[in-house]
Image (tube, rainbow, N blue to C red):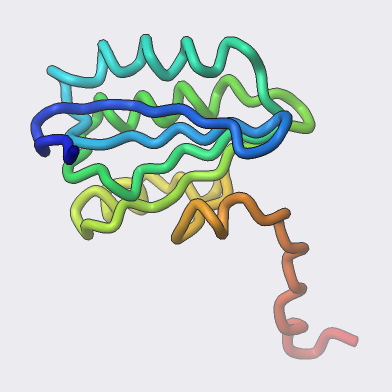
Length: 131
């Protein structure tokens, strides 16, 4: 059963111990986000060392939805990881890029990619004149 775009929903599953995947669907706006936030925080109450916030099926996101994402990120403790699965639609994906979430958490193209361990960042090219 598909969820109409105007209705936001959240499903939770735990593919492995210590890992919680929250799949958010629909539109994240001022009307839908408050109720959704209660669901999301309820799922996170049990604690997890890794949280994957799957936004791939989100059709629209406004500042209320961005705030929800930031609430999830702000609950992260030392040693925990939050990974955001990017929305498939360009508009909500662009909203997340504009606020710079990639500076704070790892962004992934799929849940499968998000479940993989983070790869060590490769050092960039040496600055000109550097040894």
